[in-house]
Length: 248
Image (cartoon, rainbow, N blue to C red; front, side, top):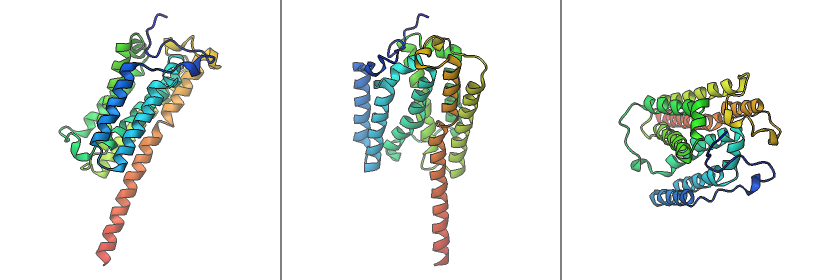
């Protein structure tokens, strides 16, 4: 199959660890991004989030994981989990709340757009299109990341009620779990780009696809569930403080 995949063609295990991506444009963009975030950061927490986002981005785009995603669909899904469920929220945390754009549209819109992007780019036809050229690849990556940062901005907005934040978090977890279940229980491999690239890693294409579904079904949910627990713990702490103040 004639594909022009960013990070290059599918590597074999013997060459995997040598497949680092030192694309100057990519490295310049990542350095510029973390510089901007560090400049905006006003607290140690915000600066730590900026540095963490930069380090995870290096894993996703510079390390051999980027090349491995050309061979294994499960690696591609792991890459996307890092992008939308780890890097995106860290970027939002790194930006001071007063510097974030004000909320001018219903939060449900960001959820719907992000859900559409997740399902769109993990559909076989659109996924194959994304691997056809670097431009198509970056269209996929930037729309996934952009919609994810929009969603996390809405989730973590200071004025967001606990109920609305939990609804966005649980809704995202459910839709990703549904997609993961479809991939896990599909009876045949769906992604033509990986029909001949998984065997060197000891995986049949269907097994690789099932692994990707499990990754999207379970590990991908953990960041959202962790944030949901933090939101709930803050709610309970605030109520306890109110009760103690009422009794004084």
